[in-house]
Image (cartoon, rainbow, N blue to C red; front, top):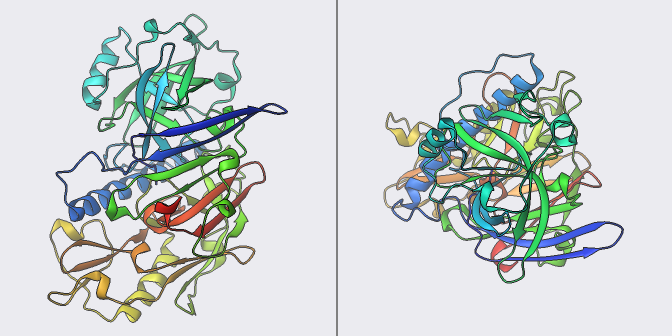
Amino acid sequence: MALHIVLPVLCLTVAVAHGLSIDFRADLNHPYAGRSSLSTGDVIIHAARASKARAARINARLARVLGNLSAADVPVAPLSDQGHSLTVGIGTPPQPRTLIVDTGSDLIWTQCSMLSRRTRTAASASRQREPLYEPRRSSSFAYLPCSDRLCQEGQFSYKNCARNNRCMYDELYGSAEAGGVLASETFTFGVNAKVSLPLGFGCGALSAGDLVGASGLMGLSPGIMSLVSQLSVPRFSYCLTPFAERKTSPLLFGAMADLRRYRTTGTVQTTSILRNPAMETAYYYVPLVGLSLGTKRLDVPATSLGMIKPDGSGGTIVDSGSTMSYLEETAFRAVKKAVVEAVRLPVANGTDEDYDDYELCFALPTGVAMEAVKTPPLVLHFDGGAAMTLPRDNYFQEPRAGLMCLAVGTSPDGFGVSIIGNVQQQNMHVLFDVRNQKFSFAPTKCDDI
């Protein structure tokens, strides 16, 4: 799930000890915080549709990068529909811009005011609320040469160094495409205490797709161009407040990303972060090895979930940008069968759009809300014994009165990667220990952090 929020307060502390150590907190706004006209049900339906499109984008991107599968047609959906965002200052003096935070992307980029017709057309298509970033107004802007490591080692869809030794790129996001030139710039974080840091980024335009008001992306993936990699941030964490509440969520970096530092409602558990053997991965893979509903372990082979195949397909990722979760087909069938047997409500058979983006919905009794329905927890089992226990609200949604839908679907055909999404992570403090390749989590009331 990418996170969509505007950052009202960002507290940041920087200390130097054996290099640069960056510790800061950002308060992320809900993806739909600025869209008050949408009801809670509308938000849930909208996010489910966007989540399905994002899952297709992830599979298509993996297929394209590895080259052993043709990228399928991808549903068109705005990039920022599920993305929390933060506001940073770009340039000297700082120009405030809102960037979507995405654990599934590494490139940091923003739409720039360049003189090309392509940029002007893209800016109009993206409908961003903010002015385009103006490199000519910044004294710290500089183009990166083609010899720079970010240009040499960055994973782009297309790269061209034929013009003035500048690193021109194009990046595909399934149904969206962004292009531009790599540059270096000063990024300023903070509102009360401001700290400025140099970063390589993409100065360009969204040539296809939509950002829904945002100005670009802030990549947090393991890739070399991400904020995490460029600044050698050893660890970061986030804790997502319940999706239906539209509250801000904390994002923590460095020493502040410590699950034991904050009050939890359950035990801190840890498993590994895996690497994709076939590519420089843009995703955080985790070894999901099994599923349970209540005390019943489901008949799902571990190889269908956590194992990344030699060709790079399969495996499970934790994604900040997907609302729902998606499981490889064998695993989803087992979950669906167990849920139908446990819930004991009529399966809803409808043709209206409320059903379109869910694979299993139940008809609630007249006048009964989802909160009155008791369901056993869905448990995600990881290698090493860690188990993430999901209560009803972390795997069911109520898109409208009288309808209770499973917020888990089948992974799109083709690449077979499973995705742990935002709904499953709500009120769960999750930590990515990049330095030690560990993934930790603990049930937490995120409002209390």
